[in-house]
Image (cartoon, rainbow, N blue to C red; front, side, top):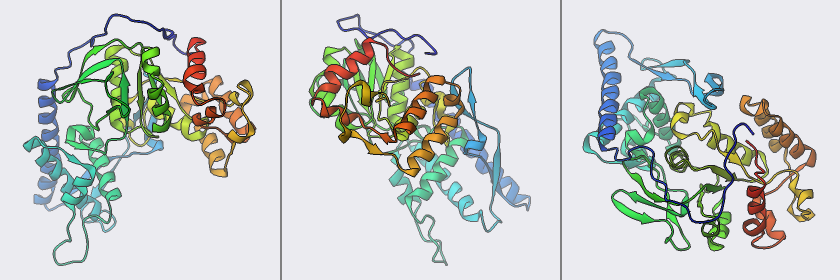
Length: 392
């Protein structure tokens, strides 16, 4: 293990309070002003170039693995300096140039009016047929989503700072009370559904009021989260339970980082034994390759992998029924992940991925139900936590 993590214990403890102020209103106002300034600077440069009779352009940082590096001291992914021009008078770039300026104006309007919009809303707000043609500004939402990500890196502003949010996808329950947009939320009293984690979880929206929890257990899917919630795992083990319904959206990842950095809570990830579970852990821990610029605000370098291990088939005497054969795509993805610098340098992870490939099959967390419906909550996770049996 790269860093020693305190073993979770059960019992009552003094409530945690944030290590720094979470009022955030003045900070958020400053961020909005700074974002508006950058939008105006980009637009101003386009106007200046046009008035000089030259081809207008926007410089867009390159979002790819080739322009991403692993910062070993910070243990996060960072975006490099490579960029590309998006010119108006270039048949291959003109449409994207127009889309970029169109959505930049839309974000400017949102910030000035102190409103927010969904990704879907931004797609429709910019959707129209260009006068005199049959050309639409966007063919589908994937085009506008990609342009918004380009704007984030160009303006050095997260999507939330552009006042744009995604669909809610994730829930939380446990020993914490928070303030959501002025409303007090006691996550101990959220019934079977839990507290729906919003897309924007910045301090201006979410503030932490009281927390007795000793750690966070993040599970991959809602189905597993429901089992932990129904069994009141969070109450028995004094923790917070979250899920991201698969690949966790940014709101969930940002909240996990804030719980870790502001409240000092260890983050344990209960994920499937397959390349996709490994990748989800990678994104939570180091950040996303395509959006490496956001790692400083999203990544949790100290997060631990408590997921199903390749050895668990024999260690827990599971039946053949839990085996899901690896596809060619699975094998290719596993080998790619093994070559990531943040995995390549860790012997434990190399052994884990090689064991997965040797087994020839993957396993889901739900496979433990073959032992007992509550085996994962009453035996598997408690034993793993007690033994500090995780991958880092």
